[in-house]
Length: 268
Image (cartoon, rainbow, N blue to C red; front, side, top):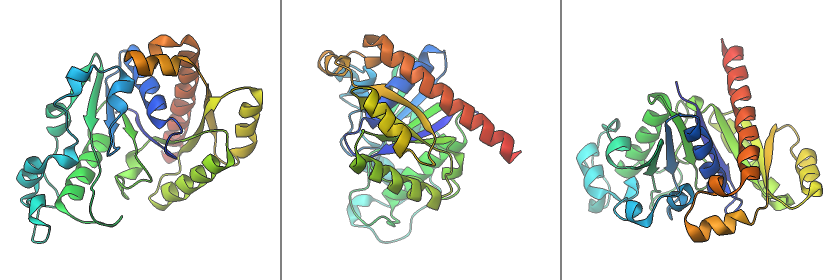
């Protein structure tokens, strides 16, 4: 089965940048990649290099009210309540409602805007069933760019994640968020957590992550690169604009796969 990776961390630390780099790294290996943007304000598409025209008609699944009504039997526009399907059909959604760029397929998940973290409603049920399907049943590399926390994951589903990455800047505040991610991950059964340091400006930042990582394995670090600004302005994939970042993400991918393989052997 394909490799399943979830990416989390404090807002603005570079989760989407890392997701885009990993997507192109695996795609260049000839592997099929499903990149999932779980942010209510999607921005993964441009980071992957998708043209605006390819994203114009692409909507987050959470906003597709007709689809939610069709699959769950309950219209989210009715204000909730009533009965609905807890195991709606989702297998066709990744291929029907996504955009493709070479070996990379982009799916916008979105977020449920109403209800608490424990919300049980047609929209949240469809999203969780969809995430469960792509993690358990699809044979490809799945990159899940999480918005905040682990709200799209649940027990059982989370166990299908090979590795969760916590992205951080070289600050104590960012590392505190990593510790919160670690607790949330453990609560739903994910123990394969790795740290990725981002926006390094010098050797002292690398030393910071080596000291601050504690019991979380450090998968690697990404340097602060002016190519990121160029990529944002030009719409080109960052992977193509920085050979150094491409090398760094290859090293991170190697660490991810070594951990995933080790854990699989332990489970056996």
